[in-house]
Image (cartoon, rainbow, N blue to C red; front, side):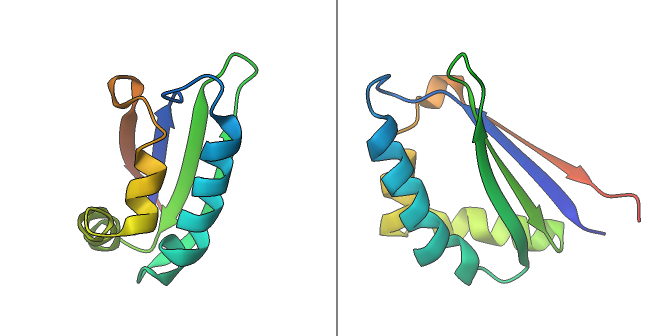
Amino acid sequence: MAVVELHTFRLLDADGERRFLDADARAQTAFAYHQPGLLRRTTARTTDGEWLVVTLWASQHDAESADAAARGNDAAQALHATIDSASATVRRYHTLD
């Protein structure tokens, strides 16, 4: 069963969009796409400043393993440093097929 992970948040600094986008691109290429079980990842935003990262994982185990690996990865930590942690939520959904 695949897992759809939804990570919503606001930026720590409203004027830090360029910094976030640079960090997001680096985290995607230097970290995320090297994680076992990652099938797809995309970033989006609303017009009112809320951001969303949607990640499709092959399994719950893959999602949890990547989460643990991110704690020790410079690119992932640089991305997290741009996010207002008080606004962040992560939800995981298991696909039905």
